[in-house]
Image (cartoon, rainbow, N blue to C red):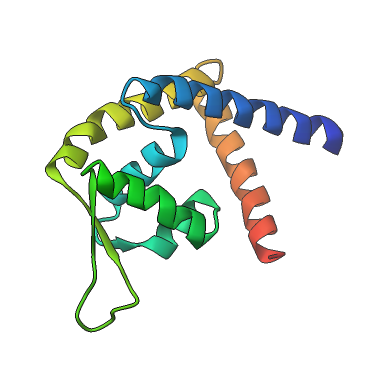
Length: 141
């Protein structure tokens, strides 16, 4: 398989993933990045804004606006520790905690859908190959 075909397939799958998650999260009044941010905070309590920016592969300034929207909806809290006023620690509110199960269900359903045609060994091998590509790209950053 040549590189153009591989990149085209990766792009098509990524586009499908975005469309699927947008549709699934729309009923929760969230977009994909909002859902991913809440899910990340749920799995990484007391994370910082820069952690979310890296995870979403976005600039910190755009993540600021995303997080402000989640704060306004009372899904997360941004706490400023006394020892470092430039840092903001992120945590979920009770409403944020309540929505996590629905968000996780959407991600789990997507994973199941994408891995359904693969055997366990094929899914493992695909994950290994994609991790190899990701490590290579991070090394070049």
